[in-house]
Length: 594
Image 1: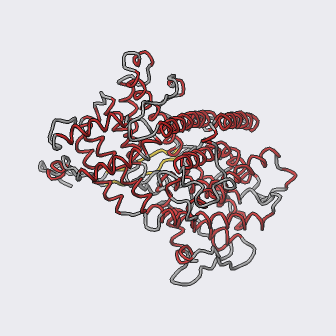
Image 2: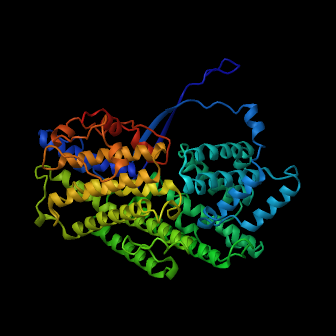
Image 3: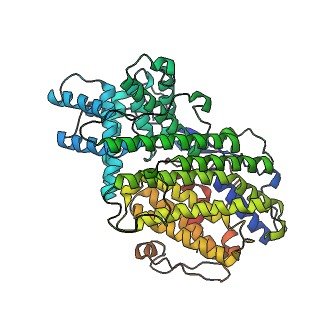
């Protein structure tokens, strides 16, 4: 692109670090183990020496990005546009009935009072740009979450992006100043929104701005808080903890260091706020209890990342097995204590104790939503906790290259137990998501934002697939493990298609899990296996040119597996998952003739 001064802008090379806790790092470990399995068959030398196999390893991915164009005058003029009043009121109500209860850091009554004053002026009175930006982000979030839960329509994402672009145009200057609580809330909500869009790589940058803005106005400080009214103190505290929740979540998914160290978290947990007339006191008490439980859980998760993943710095020497397992046991006790401290109405669910009757959860769907989301968050932390030993088990496979199927007597029993729990947790995640999305009496309204459900399901599917590389010596035996893995990978695909059958990222994730399923079938003892998933929509999705898919033997399938030691992986633009689906491995999947 050339500007008016004849200066030519070249495309820019983006580069991103995805460290030990990211799914990209996990997939790298798994594919190296698969490569080892292939080279054992071909009598080749593995490209990855076992000595280089570190649980703390990260990696860089890059992408060639076109230089962005500047906003047009029409875009700037459109920033002041708003939808009709009835549409805004519906979306505002939807936000505070959904996201606003899961992340209650915007005071509902205060926001509604400002809206009513703005409305009374015919939407022409003086209003802060940051408040208008926050309004647009509330409309965007409500459109892509609450409205999606009702219909699953792809058009909701296009509509929400309109509100997002308007907010960006309104606040592009204020977001870098970050001198008000409203600005922090705007940045925080924007970062949350970006997690579920095709711009989610931006969420890391916006989150950094939110944290710096929060610190610049002292949201972390108890001394400064004393200068505000009790209500203002509570909203400031909730916003600070919102930054902490997002910080821990992004640290996990991107595999990057936390921006807010644990020692910076000194404030007491939030308390219940005065209740607006539109909602009940019980709902807000439950929302506060859910928020506090999430904060406590994610603080444990942050400490797990610090202790077992070297804070995602990529600078740690690998600790001994004994030290790692000791830490895992200690964190396991912390998680057990956390679970026992939950109030009864927020007790965790399992697939066995979910509501069985179609009307059982109708009278209190919000409580079931809180319990289900909290359960999935807890299970995801359990996966994170047990992953280090699983990775070491993969490393053992590399070191024992001449004995691909280890003798059960040589396996450390604690390793085996931790690996077994790792798989069981992954199965629990898939069972719950599958049950919710495939039962007509449940549905999307119980699981929150779709992108988190996609992340949980995909992480669990990776664990199921990877476990086959180390579980041939398990008590169940080869055949049992293979059949179980096929069943759970199939359930993952079916559940995700229920999540959405037209969302691009969901469909790419389904396609990726389908490829893992093909490899599992190739590992089966028979030369040809046809997948029977008992699902018409999934069956049609997994067929090639109208016919059933046949699976070749493992040696044929793995002989063309790409080398994972490349300096450049495809760089997608969705929340970390996208980096798989455009990578060398995905292109290999697509090019391989089945």
